[in-house]
Length: 377
Image (tube, rainbow, N blue to C red; front, side):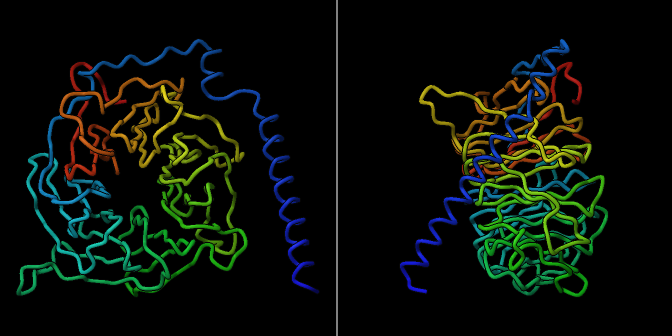
């Protein structure tokens, strides 16, 4: 078969794939006769009222000298770990703003960090394609640096995301630029399962984010530059349980809804979306119109403890608080006093839901707490 014939067959196959993709898109649209907000309005659900004093910046954590890329809360003790372009991990006491650890990393190009469930260790990954584990109780070396307690080698691309399996300090999941996710056994340093890669149901571009279900730790979702999100079962690595379409840009952030039956996404297309893992349907799009008709990319998301609020950080420095039920912005933290001066790169909620921490390219982290008569939602 000649090269010309191969090109012709490839073009015909591509056209068929695009046609099928468009038909699937139209079919999904026909099945979705309403969304969450439309149904909530039809049932007379009242909108949340939120004022500028209901969520206030109570602390600014200063110490990094480069852009903050990632943060994570420990499940207890009110501590936060942050990763920065300055090549350091800092562990903070969120109540006092004090730094308890400043860890100089072997590779300065860090992209992600995570606290273990017990809070005894932290993990990080970046452009060196490895995930490094630090035991916070280990003694420092002669130069005063905390040594790496375990290095997880195996990815062939940068490590973009990492998260410990809930209630286990011995396993974590990473996402990578090599288009795969990996479940690791930290005790042995070996890969337990690889999701994607040579398997056809895997991502076709870099994986940017992962989120493990808190109610069923065998399930996790991954977001990718291929504009899709995929649901995985750690017991069946050979294929994704389901693939979710809808975004028109890189999926930078994924986060499970508190009940474990849904998850949210944030994308370069400027939207956040809510999906149902049982039906595969898109339930809601969260999109704020701007005057120039261009929406800044969403870099990070988190849900409140009840799921009624969705926090979304954008590249223009906005941090919208969405009412997930009615798909309305109830507050923009970026417009408040003491807000960040650059893009919001990461955010996360404390385990009890009482405080939100945001990290930014302005090198600072800020802790926001519910104020006044506002109850935790």
